[in-house]
Image (tube, rainbow, N blue to C red; front, top):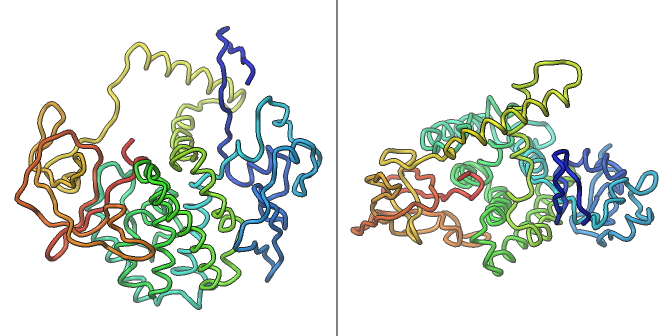
Length: 399
């Protein structure tokens, strides 16, 4: 792409330009139909239909939209000519605007499933009994003390706090806590459907798993199966725009890598810092820019050490990965290395859609071997009557 001249007079070569936004923002900047319209899918030409006063999308992806059709303004979902963004050289629609999994998966699909199962009348045919939801929430409270310090929020009760769940909490349920807790309370078919989403998202957020083409194919197939089965289990109400766009997620993971590479979580987290520094009601953009330049200058002249949560010999931060081994930490050394007991795999948490051993999730017991080394990632370790249940953290939760 062309050089862009910055304020300081420095020309910076932009090699790739992408936009991270939710569905309404994507529709606004691209001048396309909204996500609640019949041709609202930005990535394919699938046409939805109105059922019970809501737009229902197909369970399969349609013909892909092309950059050339967007450029000429001939796509069926464009409102009034091409977007001004198309004037930027080298910008390819729709490849340059990937779906954001924070809004698509966490605030979209997972929240909708939870409301079907635990809250609204729309899911009355599959909703759990109040006593089961209360018992499930009690189990959530039991695992809350074992959440590592990387987590900004501990899991909260579903029966009282579901309407207040943040995106990070919904993400933690689909990645870590849901497969462990829901297996005792959800009907088998609903639990298996949830596992399809869990398996796919966990793989898509773990770079070392994405490096194996076969595991990537497993995850893509699981996501497609999740959409199809969800429609059968929950009915037309579940087939919203977000659920349909899940079908396009694997192609963007193939292009961009882990979901953490193109999500809105970093921007949402930084938004709180911006709000704290906002002191005026006029000229807010100029004010925030001046504030951020001051922060940049402070960090440049007096850089702080990178914030990183260290493992300890005490729960809940006493389990990590060293090399290819899951380790229970017994000592932490001054150079950053740790010593601990190697845990031996004793069985997977689930076998459907694929064995959880592929994700290194399962039951582990102490061995007689110890190891010393630099921890690569931390794990959630939940005590069990005989062994312990271990779930390694995905890369995003390590930063």
